[in-house]
Length: 203
Image (cartoon, rainbow, N blue to C red; front, side, top):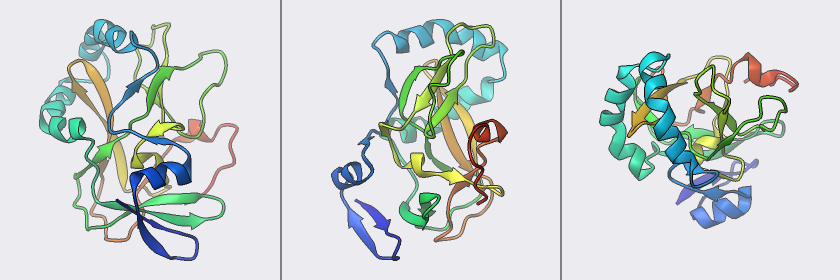
Protein backbone atom coordinates (compact mmCIF):
# COMPACT_ATOMS: atom_id res chain seq x y z
CA UNK A 1 0.00 0.00 0.00
CA UNK A 2 1.07 3.58 -0.70
CA UNK A 3 -0.18 6.65 1.15
CA UNK A 4 -1.18 9.43 -1.24
CA UNK A 5 -2.12 12.92 -0.05
CA UNK A 6 -4.06 15.03 -2.55
CA UNK A 7 -4.05 18.80 -3.08
CA UNK A 8 -6.60 19.21 -0.30
CA UNK A 9 -4.29 17.45 2.16
CA UNK A 10 -6.54 14.39 2.36
CA UNK A 11 -4.41 11.27 2.77
CA UNK A 12 -5.50 7.72 1.91
CA UNK A 13 -3.77 4.37 1.44
CA UNK A 14 -3.88 3.02 -2.11
CA UNK A 15 -2.87 -0.27 -3.69
CA UNK A 16 -0.10 -0.34 -6.26
CA UNK A 17 -2.73 -1.12 -8.91
CA UNK A 18 -4.52 2.10 -7.97
CA UNK A 19 -1.20 3.97 -8.01
CA UNK A 20 -0.52 2.71 -11.54
CA UNK A 21 -3.97 3.74 -12.71
CA UNK A 22 -3.85 7.17 -11.11
CA UNK A 23 -0.40 8.13 -12.46
CA UNK A 24 -0.51 6.06 -15.67
CA UNK A 25 2.65 3.99 -15.31
CA UNK A 26 3.62 0.37 -14.54
CA UNK A 27 5.22 -0.18 -11.14
CA UNK A 28 8.38 -2.31 -11.30
CA UNK A 29 10.91 -3.24 -8.61
CA UNK A 30 13.97 -3.65 -10.83
CA UNK A 31 15.48 -2.31 -14.02
CA UNK A 32 13.74 -3.34 -17.24
CA UNK A 33 15.53 -3.58 -20.59
CA UNK A 34 14.41 -2.18 -23.93
CA UNK A 35 15.31 -5.39 -25.74
CA UNK A 36 16.50 -8.83 -24.70
CA UNK A 37 20.13 -8.39 -25.78
CA UNK A 38 20.74 -5.11 -23.98
CA UNK A 39 21.61 -6.66 -20.62
CA UNK A 40 24.11 -8.97 -22.36
CA UNK A 41 25.60 -6.01 -24.24
CA UNK A 42 26.16 -4.13 -20.99
CA UNK A 43 27.71 -7.14 -19.25
CA UNK A 44 30.05 -7.66 -22.22
CA UNK A 45 31.19 -4.07 -22.76
CA UNK A 46 31.09 -2.47 -19.34
CA UNK A 47 33.65 -4.33 -17.15
CA UNK A 48 36.67 -2.56 -18.72
CA UNK A 49 34.94 0.81 -18.54
CA UNK A 50 33.95 0.30 -14.93
CA UNK A 51 37.54 -0.46 -13.96
CA UNK A 52 39.09 2.44 -15.89
CA UNK A 53 36.40 5.12 -15.79
CA UNK A 54 34.84 7.32 -13.11
CA UNK A 55 33.00 4.43 -11.50
CA UNK A 56 35.52 2.82 -9.18
CA UNK A 57 35.86 -0.27 -7.05
CA UNK A 58 33.82 1.16 -4.18
CA UNK A 59 30.74 0.72 -6.39
CA UNK A 60 31.37 -3.04 -6.40
CA UNK A 61 31.67 -3.00 -2.60
CA UNK A 62 28.42 -1.01 -2.44
CA UNK A 63 26.85 -3.71 -4.58
CA UNK A 64 27.76 -6.30 -1.96
CA UNK A 65 26.38 -4.04 0.77
CA UNK A 66 23.06 -3.19 -0.89
CA UNK A 67 22.41 -6.20 -3.12
CA UNK A 68 19.52 -7.58 -1.06
CA UNK A 69 17.77 -4.20 -1.01
CA UNK A 70 18.25 -3.68 -4.74
CA UNK A 71 17.12 -7.20 -5.66
CA UNK A 72 13.99 -6.86 -3.50
CA UNK A 73 13.12 -3.37 -4.79
CA UNK A 74 13.37 -1.88 -1.31
CA UNK A 75 12.46 1.79 -0.84
CA UNK A 76 12.51 3.58 2.50
CA UNK A 77 9.08 4.29 4.05
CA UNK A 78 7.64 7.19 2.02
CA UNK A 79 4.36 8.67 0.86
CA UNK A 80 3.23 10.71 -2.14
CA UNK A 81 2.03 14.24 -1.53
CA UNK A 82 0.77 17.06 -3.71
CA UNK A 83 3.37 19.87 -3.75
CA UNK A 84 1.59 22.47 -5.88
CA UNK A 85 -0.10 22.86 -9.26
CA UNK A 86 3.18 23.52 -11.06
CA UNK A 87 5.30 20.76 -9.57
CA UNK A 88 2.61 18.14 -9.05
CA UNK A 89 3.39 15.32 -6.62
CA UNK A 90 6.51 14.67 -4.60
CA UNK A 91 7.96 12.02 -2.31
CA UNK A 92 7.81 12.55 1.47
CA UNK A 93 9.52 10.78 4.34
CA UNK A 94 7.18 8.71 6.50
CA UNK A 95 9.90 8.25 9.09
CA UNK A 96 12.99 10.07 10.30
CA UNK A 97 15.89 9.17 7.99
CA UNK A 98 19.50 9.25 9.12
CA UNK A 99 22.29 10.75 7.05
CA UNK A 100 23.90 8.25 4.63
CA UNK A 101 20.81 6.02 4.69
CA UNK A 102 19.97 4.07 1.53
CA UNK A 103 16.74 5.42 0.00
CA UNK A 104 16.12 3.27 -3.07
CA UNK A 105 17.13 2.56 -6.66
CA UNK A 106 16.02 4.66 -9.61
CA UNK A 107 14.48 2.09 -11.92
CA UNK A 108 12.71 2.27 -15.26
CA UNK A 109 13.21 1.11 -18.82
CA UNK A 110 16.90 1.04 -19.69
CA UNK A 111 16.92 2.10 -23.34
CA UNK A 112 18.94 3.81 -26.07
CA UNK A 113 19.38 7.55 -25.92
CA UNK A 114 19.82 9.42 -29.18
CA UNK A 115 23.01 11.48 -29.41
CA UNK A 116 21.53 13.55 -32.28
CA UNK A 117 17.91 14.02 -31.23
CA UNK A 118 16.48 14.59 -27.77
CA UNK A 119 14.31 11.55 -27.12
CA UNK A 120 14.42 11.97 -23.34
CA UNK A 121 11.64 13.30 -21.13
CA UNK A 122 11.12 14.54 -17.57
CA UNK A 123 11.55 11.03 -16.16
CA UNK A 124 14.84 10.12 -17.84
CA UNK A 125 18.11 9.58 -16.02
CA UNK A 126 21.31 9.30 -18.03
CA UNK A 127 22.93 5.89 -17.62
CA UNK A 128 26.74 5.92 -17.29
CA UNK A 129 28.32 5.18 -20.65
CA UNK A 130 31.90 5.17 -21.89
CA UNK A 131 32.74 8.52 -23.50
CA UNK A 132 33.83 6.89 -26.77
CA UNK A 133 30.89 4.49 -26.98
CA UNK A 134 28.46 4.86 -29.87
CA UNK A 135 25.66 3.60 -27.67
CA UNK A 136 24.25 6.13 -25.19
CA UNK A 137 21.75 4.82 -22.65
CA UNK A 138 19.19 6.24 -20.23
CA UNK A 139 16.76 5.01 -17.59
CA UNK A 140 13.27 6.13 -18.60
CA UNK A 141 10.67 5.86 -15.82
CA UNK A 142 7.83 7.60 -17.67
CA UNK A 143 6.02 4.29 -18.37
CA UNK A 144 7.83 1.90 -16.01
CA UNK A 145 9.27 2.80 -12.63
CA UNK A 146 8.93 2.87 -8.86
CA UNK A 147 8.32 5.61 -6.29
CA UNK A 148 11.72 7.25 -6.90
CA UNK A 149 10.29 8.64 -10.16
CA UNK A 150 8.44 11.16 -7.97
CA UNK A 151 11.61 12.66 -6.43
CA UNK A 152 11.59 16.34 -7.35
CA UNK A 153 14.42 18.78 -7.96
CA UNK A 154 15.71 20.68 -4.95
CA UNK A 155 18.08 23.66 -4.90
CA UNK A 156 19.14 22.48 -1.45
CA UNK A 157 18.60 18.74 -1.84
CA UNK A 158 18.69 16.11 0.88
CA UNK A 159 19.56 13.25 -1.49
CA UNK A 160 22.39 12.40 -3.86
CA UNK A 161 22.93 9.57 -6.32
CA UNK A 162 25.62 6.93 -6.18
CA UNK A 163 26.51 3.99 -8.40
CA UNK A 164 26.24 0.39 -7.36
CA UNK A 165 27.61 -2.50 -9.43
CA UNK A 166 26.06 -5.95 -9.22
CA UNK A 167 27.13 -8.64 -11.72
CA UNK A 168 28.62 -5.97 -14.04
CA UNK A 169 25.32 -4.04 -14.15
CA UNK A 170 25.33 -0.44 -12.90
CA UNK A 171 22.46 0.63 -10.64
CA UNK A 172 21.71 4.28 -9.87
CA UNK A 173 20.65 4.67 -6.23
CA UNK A 174 19.80 7.47 -3.81
CA UNK A 175 21.49 8.21 -0.48
CA UNK A 176 20.50 10.74 2.20
CA UNK A 177 23.04 13.57 2.43
CA UNK A 178 21.80 14.68 5.86
CA UNK A 179 19.28 13.75 8.52
CA UNK A 180 15.76 14.03 7.09
CA UNK A 181 12.75 14.75 9.28
CA UNK A 182 9.44 12.92 9.20
CA UNK A 183 7.16 14.64 6.67
CA UNK A 184 10.02 16.32 4.78
CA UNK A 185 10.05 16.15 1.01
CA UNK A 186 12.88 14.12 -0.56
CA UNK A 187 14.70 16.13 -3.24
CA UNK A 188 17.65 15.76 -5.58
CA UNK A 189 19.49 18.37 -7.64
CA UNK A 190 18.72 17.59 -11.28
CA UNK A 191 21.70 19.62 -12.50
CA UNK A 192 21.89 22.48 -14.99
CA UNK A 193 21.64 20.28 -18.10
CA UNK A 194 18.15 19.15 -17.10
CA UNK A 195 16.84 22.73 -17.24
CA UNK A 196 18.09 23.34 -20.76
CA UNK A 197 14.92 24.08 -22.79
CA UNK A 198 12.82 23.69 -19.63
CA UNK A 199 11.28 26.31 -17.34
CA UNK A 200 13.27 26.17 -14.12
CA UNK A 201 11.21 25.54 -11.00
CA UNK A 202 12.70 26.63 -7.68
CA UNK A 203 12.05 24.16 -4.88
